[in-house]
Length: 438
Ligand SMILES: [Zn+2]
Image (cartoon, rainbow, N blue to C red; front, side, top):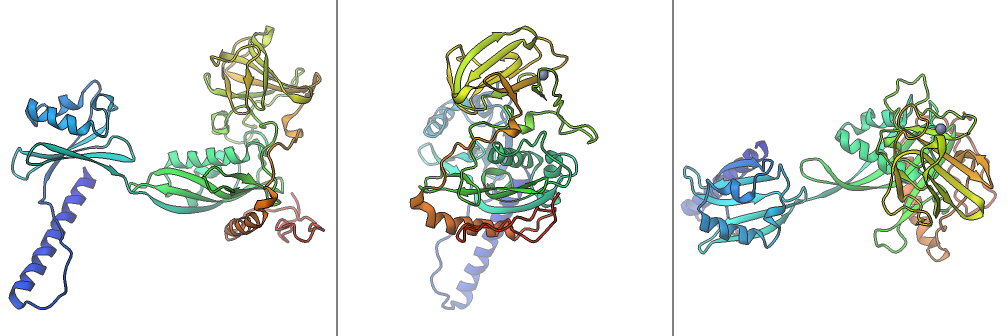
C-alpha cells in the first residue's frame, strides 16, 4: 500500500511540473528547445488485494467488472500467465479512475520478478508483462568467528542491510563454495575468520534475486582457503579455483548435509554443535531435523539400501578405489535410489530420521576404504580440473582482480605465514606478514 501511495504522489508531482512548464511557455514563449512528449497518467485510486486461499482471480474481480468484461480481461491476462495457476497471496492491484467505481487497470504480481499489467482500452483490455527492475551491487564483508560460523554471518554488522533470509542464503553460497574444503559444522575454531566479495542482483524492495561469490577466503586454524570464481567460457557456468588455479572440487564432500540444516548453530558455544562422537563404530553423527535431505558425498553405485540392524534404514555407496560411504538412521529413501543405482556427488539419496538404534533424529555417516574407517577431514582427493592451460592468461588477470577485491577488506584474524613459493610466477599472496600462526 505504502509503495503505491508513493507512486501516485510522484505522478501528481510530475503533472504539476508539466503544468508549470506549459504556463511558462504560454506567457513568455521563450525558446526552450523541444521537450519530449511526456504522458502523465491521471492520479488513480488503487486497491491492493492479496488472493485469498481458494479465491480465484475472476472471483476477486467479481464486484469490480461485469462478466463480459471479466472474460475479456482474463483473455488478455492469458497472453502472459495462467489465471488458474495464481498462488495464494498473489498481490493484485485494482486501479480506478479517481472518484469513480470505474476500473481502468489491474496489476497482477505473478512472481517477484514479473507483473502482468492490464489496461482498459476502447475495445476491451490489453496486457503487458513488466519485468521488475534489477540492479547489481557487490557486498564486501569480513568476520571473525566467536562460536559458530552461522552466528558470525547473521550477526555481522556489515551485513545488517540484508534481510535475515538473505544472510542465510549467503551462508548457503559460502557453504557451497567451501563444501569440499571446510566442514563449517565441526571444523570451526574461535578466531577463524573470513572475508568475501559477493555480487548480487537486488530488486527495488531491497530483496536479493540472485547472487554469486566473486572471491572468498576462509581462514581455519590459521590456514587460509580461497575460492575465486572463474568462468572460462563466459556462459555463466564458471566454477571456483584456489589461488594457484587448482579446482576447489574434491572427490568427496566433507559432509552429506548442507551446513545450515545441521542443528547446533544456535548452540551457546561451550559444547561443540555437532554430536561428533567417535564411538566404537567411529562414524560421525550429524544432528538434524527429520526429513533433512542427505547427499551422496561422491559419485558411486548404491550397494546397500534397506534396514541394517542398529543402523536402521541405511544406504551404502561404493566409489572407486575401494571407498564406501555409509548413511544410517534414515527416515526414508529417495525414490529411485535402489540397489545398483548410479549416483552423483550431491545427489539426494534419502532423508534424516531416527530408525534403528537412535535416541533422536540424526545422520550417522561413515567413510571407509577397504573396510578401514577414515575421518572425511583427513581425506583430500582432488577431483576437478585445474584452469585449462589455454585460459591461464585470462585466469591470472581475473584472479588477480578478484583477489585484490578481497585485499581491500581487512582480515580480522591471524594467518599463518608461509614461505613464498620458489616458483616465481606462482601467486603467493598467502605469504603475508600478518599473524604468527594459530
Ligand atoms: Zn552414529
